Image (cartoon, rainbow, N blue to C red; front, side, top):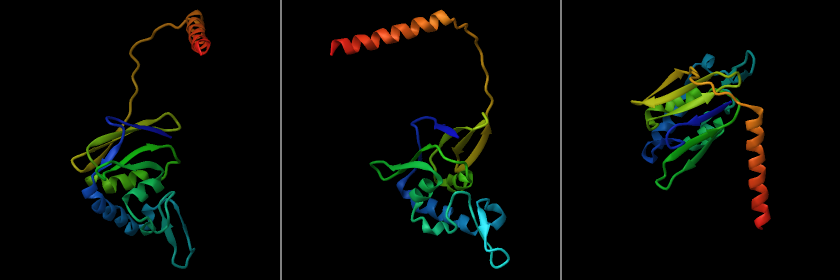
Length: 168
């Protein structure tokens, strides 16, 4: 699963919205059991359910940053204390549910994904909502590639590298 974030390379939740985002994320704990695809245990006696790749009790995660880190995202704070969410390279769980819950507190921006099977899509955050856009790839120009051209490029690259080491 791959992704990239357009614009400045990260999604942002401003410092003053982190507590509200955390409340929205923790409200997911009370979602119907059928909404939690991570698994269950307990059998017939008080079964317990959880979200994919997340702890059974979300409240064990102390803050918004910890929630997105647990989902598999790279998270950092900037100099203002805003939360920056960027890299993701993990198994797909139910991260869309968590982003949708936090959408009212995520600054406008978008996040593009490429799936293992070649599908791609984008999440767009605007007006306090998360939108899902399906991808469509269009190729517009075909340029011939000759083996001789590729060999010439490789020879030129090796010559540049050799010249760099010869100067040392």
